[in-house]
Length: 342
Image (cartoon, rainbow, N blue to C red):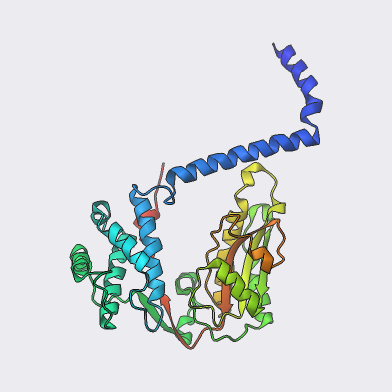
């Protein structure tokens, strides 16, 4: 039997080692792995599932964080985020969600909703059709002793206080970084940005390949076009005069097993870049680039980016105003995401 196998291998070897055949087989293998990735995404992601408590929590975070961003405006619009409010009403009335009130992200969703109602009524808005007093009282009742009338949902800063811990130990430094959306419109000096990228380049990458690229766009017309495509920084684009486009180059990856490595290495680099920006007192706010392949095509009409590179994130940067607010962005408690296994 072994002799037959060796004979078959000998016959097939020239075919299998043909470059064109190798590429066809590799392509099929790649597509099979992407198919498996897609099946797992379809099976578990909140985009397709709503029954698991973690799916519900993910939807809560998506919706309540949108309200947090609305609270950053000096005067919130009447009925701001009606679509999000309606989504949250459905989720917060779910018995499964109510039973998990001790989870940090679920608790803060109720708190943000209570604050939203209080802000809207304080401003004299009529929102009964969108958010009734009965619903507000119900959310306060669910919170019980957890309800805090002093809860604001936003953090207030002046520049000196915001940056006071940039030279502190890492714990204080890391806790001090927040996304800032209020810029003066003043350009950040290019020498500072060179230092930022030099520091960010310390980010680890697979086999030290360093595939991340940093583009800094300073054409205001193009910036506005790109942020319109991104469609998540609305209301804050006026004073954005510099925009970072972070990419990761696919040309640096060898195997099918590395098909998601651009996102991993790009994400690691992104965090280091955000820390470096904060260290050099450059206000910044990562803007989500969660686009389908079709949705991201228009950016190539604005920017001449290499097609080999995957956009990881857009980051509006600038000099912060003297006083500004940031979202609370409540963090999880350690018991929610730390697990010891044997």
